[in-house]
View 1 (tube, rainbow, N blue to C red):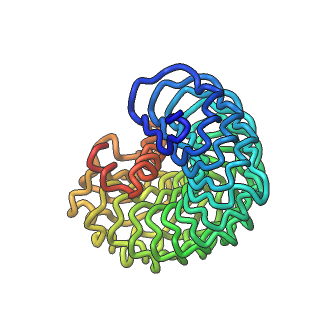
View 2: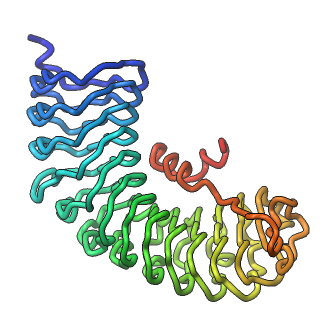
Length: 348
């Protein structure tokens, strides 16, 4: 029948409910299946593997449960696998040598466990790896990213990854977003963070990172830098105020940074959020005050900040001062829109 010739199925942003029927596998000519943002329930049928012409499978923002069927490995032409914002569990069943054409792997906001499969290492066309907000574990597989020259987004925040941040994740000249916050990463921030000149956003918050903040003088497009709640020491790099003048977000709260606040912060004319509280910094933020930055958070007993509101002043021994930039919603916006910050800042 004519339905078997169907190539495109686009049902995004509707109110469809019920299960994905097993008969879906009969649509062997289907190239694109999109059901984003509906109310589909149940499991993903194994017959999905019969749809061997599929280039895009987008089932995100539904209420799907169960595991990702291993039959997904039969979709050798697949370029986009997006099943984010569901209730999937289990491990990623990706096998080496399969799915080598993938450009987008988006499975964030599920309940996936286990490690990142080694099959990812051979996905040389991969542009976006989005596995944040799961229950994944294991050492951060830095060497895996050495052969992914097209990788532009790596979003692994809010998992249980351990180990150090490998400099290899900054090998890709296409890298724009690195979001590794809310894990258990240790060690120092590699100086190679300064390598990909197109980098837009870096989120390393709430880990156990030590050492100093590397220079960022080769990152003229940087819009956001979030490193709060680590154990970073040393001074705040002068390069931030000198070379990253497009910054909208600078979040350095809750570290062990010392020395004077750089006076060249007055060059950050686009700044929307500046937080340097819970450190050992001194000096003045009057330059930032002159810019009328909407949110400035500082230790007002050590850092002069005449424009800081009462809730933005972290007095020693008074209050919790737990106001952090909502980085996760930003990352989701960044991923959804394909661009970072502008729309999010306008709508927050």
